[in-house]
Amino acid sequence: MSFRVVRSSKFRHVYGQALKREQCYDNIRVSKSSWDSTFCAVNPKFLAIIVESAGGGAFIVLPHNKVGRIAADHPLVGGHKGPVLDIAWCPHNDNVIASGSEDCVVKVWQIPDGGLSRTLTEPVVDLVFHQRRVGLVLWHPSALNVLLTAGSDNQVVIWNVGTGEILVHIDSHPDIVYSACFNWDGSKLVTTCKDKKIRIYEPRTGELESEAMCHEGSKATRAIFLRHGLIFTTGFNRSSERQYSLRAPDALNEPIVMVELDTSNGVMFPLYDADTNMIYLCGKGDSVIRYFEVTPEPPFVHYINTFQTTEPQRGIGLMPKRGCDVTTCEVAKFYRMNNNGLCQVISMTVPRKSDLFQEDLYPDTLAEDAAITAEEWIDGKDADPITFSLKDRVSIVQGGYVSSSVNKSLPSKKAGNILNKPRGDSASSGATGSSAGGGNFASGNNNEASEGGPPAAVLSEKDLRTIQDEIRKLKAIIVKQENRIRALEAKEDARNKNGSDAAPASAGAASSDGKASESANDHASTSAGTSKDED
Image (cartoon, rainbow, N blue to C red; front, side, top):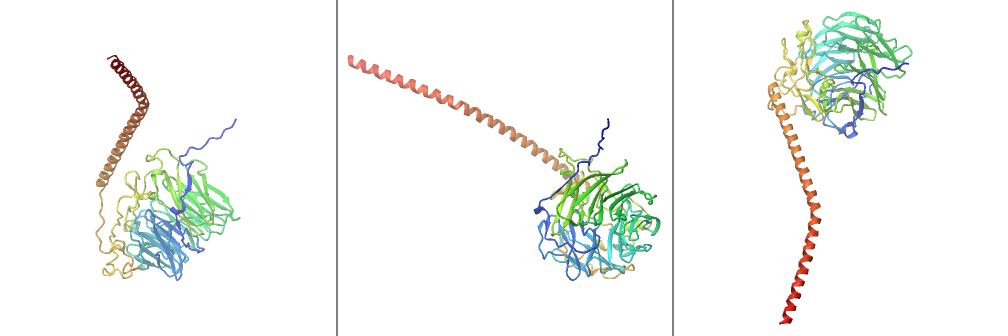
């Protein structure tokens, strides 16, 4: 007799659910570029989508509360002279976003907290080096203001955005770079190239450590580092079947797992959640999202389920864990662009009956603070990204969870950090010059909502804990009063019921008393008349 043992996993029942149309974003003209990019970037404050724009390239930035139909004349970020190919939010500053374009320039923008009130055309800094279009921008996971860019000129450049300087230049790729990814602490870099090979570099020196054949197909491939050091890749075989693989960095030639999925033509983008070790595969032109869990037990990559829709997707973005709603056990949130202009919000949820914080679903996640500076990183220091618990340092904002702390930028030691300077007086502070590495700083921001306003208040950890304790006390008082009100209402209902039952009995007794009194009066009057006759 044989029986099948079901694998034990708390993510085995994860399911996806699309929000209602009025809670999504409509009337967005998503870019029609054929470049293999997600066209979308999300953080707990904003949603950014690359859009079609006449006379250059642009992308739209929306606060999360601006749902519904977007006006056709909504302000854009439109300083590029060619179509925008890739965008990426800074993991250490939710207001800073980088964009790469066909005009060969990488621009870094600073978005005001309330969103855009008019079209933004002046970036904080221009990073000028590439000779052909720039199709990849990637931030360092733990070092402040470290940005990687790659272009069709086969060059990979690592910048210090705070000063506009080039830190590292890697020119050993023979063809176009399809993808790049840092490992967990940023000490290694993996890239995939059009020559079908996967390479691992030491990012500070640009030294090639190892290379191997990735996927045999000629279409685009993708590779990402997992949290514990393994590499996950997606690509095609010689028969144009889509496949994924799992590899160890010291044995790239020997995949641990190699699995064929289907025969679709769309490039698959692996979106990785380091907290849950789940990988979501989203193909361009697909109407499904497949998700897997990576574990130490064979077959190592476990298929969980597939989320299906009716519309094919043009682009997709994954919200960081800081933006997920922990009260509903939401483990992932996707922003999915359709061809009809709708940006659909999809929530991935683990079914749980309790409303309490589920610590097993939410381990410490990435914080918005940088662990080291760019100078420390280039000098050889490695550091894991700073993490924090969503249970202790979160506040509810429109159904999602963001950190309670104020965004901070670490100051640069060797030169002034342009991202720290107030936008209004950047012209007078001499930020219009160009650095030696090719970074041209803008003279101002034409979109600053309020210049010279009061500085934002910074709360300490002690103050935050005090506020949270007061909120808990107020909630306890409310629950106590609600229970008291319910008890009083129950007593009142019981009293009213008893009174209604006693009313008919009292009415019957009163009627019998009335009849008795009437008979007594008749008898008395009869007696009186008899005595009068006798007299």
